[in-house]
Amino acid sequence: MSTTTISVNKLTKTYNGQMAIEDISLNIQQGEIFGFLGHNGVGKTTTVNILTTLLDLSSGSAEVCGHDVVKDSMSVRRMIGYLPENVQFYDALTLHENLAFFARLSGISKPGDRIREVLQFLEFTGFEHQKLATFSKGMRQRVGIAQAILHKPEVLFLDEPTSGLDPQGVKTLRESIIRLNKELGMTIFMNTHLLSEVTKTCTSIGILSGGRLIYHDSLAKTLEAFPGRDSLEDIYLSIGKQF
Amino acid sequence: MRTLLVIAKHEFKSAGKERLSIALLVVFLGMVLVSSFIGWTTHHTVMSIYNETLHETGMKLLNPFLKASPLDSIKNTVIYIVLIGALLAVITGARSSVRDRKAFVVDLVFSRPVSSWSYVFGKLLGVQAWIGLVLLVAAITSWVSIWVVTAQVLSPLNTLLLLAFFALAWFFLLPFSAAGLISGAYGRYESTALLIPILFWVVVTFVIPQLGTAAHPTALLNPVASGNTTTGMFFQVSRFVLQPISLTEHFKHTSGILLRLQDVEPLPVWQDLLSIGVISLLSLGALARVSRQAIRQGLYE
Image (tube, rainbow over all chains, first blue to last red; front, side):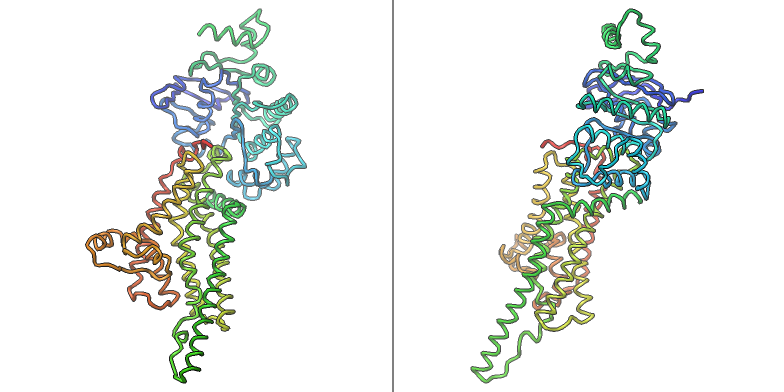
């Protein structure tokens, strides 16, 4: 029996009176890869920022792994890993130094073994002593995944993880995400506007439009519910037209 | 507490890699050496005049250097701490906040179980630890140079006084580091984040002492505190108002006592220490109010 890992109830966020997201409610079960779809600027990052406790909510409530994101934010942070869009690091430090810093912040006092383990899992060895300044965008995204899973989180939040990557980079990252879900059982919440990626990676989707959640279901049911539509892109556009 | 120490250690390491901080460190340590050289030339000049006078007049005059403490030869270090040390502290503090905002790593840090309190105080501890290391190197440099200049090893008491002077300098620099960190957290541009604490340094170092003492601007570069130089009503009032917050004058006065400098007003040091302590506490209070949202703001350049 699956358990709810992320629970969002009537979540609303306003910035200086402007509504960013409105009345969002959704439940994400343990082990899902949830694709959060929507155009740029519809509130996907705002939602992730609230769920990762980086941003205060205006009204409603949200829980991650049973912990309230407002009242018990420190417990939420212990359970999650986060990869922001355009992730950056300390360029003057080496890969190992960067990862060691974030590992220690997560309570791993001697992170050497864990760093090696994570880099091996991601098939990203041989760069430990290189400065991040020399890394490509694709390499940085993999470092971003590495820092996010160092402390073995239960939930991984990824904000546009494939943004700006070349096709090989996209493929490598997609494979890593699927392995994290299948082999380590992580629940993954992924913001994206690339529908092809959702089809290849996600088990369920939610569509955000104008700050409101207009659709939420499993990917399989979504594809069944729209017969005659060739692709998720068609379905997405069809749902979008209804709202 | 654990995350605070992790951030402090990281900050200490990062501060040591900052080009601007390293440049100021080199200037500061260079000036400490210059201070000893100035002490040596002063010593040499006075001794020459003394010997010449003795030779010409056949009189027996008291050698003024016999009255001076060996610590007197590094008295210019007091003003270098006020000028370069404080500038080093504000810039290192500001760069510390700006570095994370510029590298966009703040969100990664705050997605960990790290409170804003641990973050800012960890950074302050790291910056102050780095400044502590700089001051320790300066203390060793001073001790050795006094030995070379005066051709005698400092007594245990004088060594303790020297260490107490550098410990006082560490406390004196704390509000400057905090001001830099606060400005680095709130500044919308990197340039303003650096310029605002420099303005703070100018006001604390030059404007407040001048309004409080009516001393000439050049007198403020004297390592000995200026005291009150006028009986005019305006300066009497401004002295009454500004004297308690005249951080640099308090530092210079207590430093003068610790280094046993001549011409220091024989006033008790508790007022100085109270003033430095209260200002340090106020700066820590202001730092504690820095919010996570402020630190998360992007920089516009």
